[in-house]
Length: 171
Image (cartoon, helix red, strand yellow):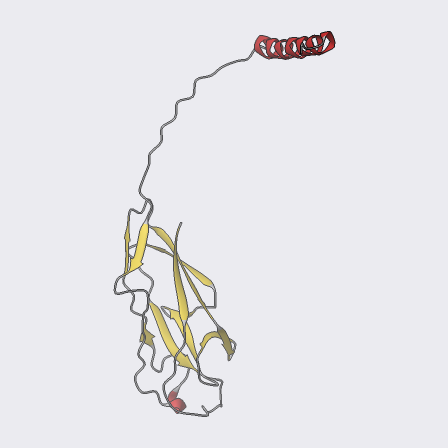
């Protein structure tokens, strides 16, 4: 069966229209510029805690009547951060935890009623979800201190535990 005259005419018109469009685009004048690019591909930075991702702070025996949330059993949070392939030494440490508000202070909630852990950077209280900006090689000193509401007594004795998440980000 042969195509009809109308089909061939339509096909020709479409073909001519497409050619006309292409000619319009090709005849438009444009300025051209040459752009030179220099790209340096680097390895992604990598930071990890030497000794694993779980850090333990041991307060030893704690006498509840001495808990002051400031100095009694102030214990260094020992972490050893190792980074490679840093393009900058500027880092950010984020500290976050399940919050227990004690005496106007954000503290880490423990498994014991009326007992929390206050976090300090040097001698300054750190709030939950705080960011600490620092330079790699000059790590911030982080301390943990037991804290309880003023005038309260702990209802039971025994071990206690709590969890804080330390996240390191590149700047």
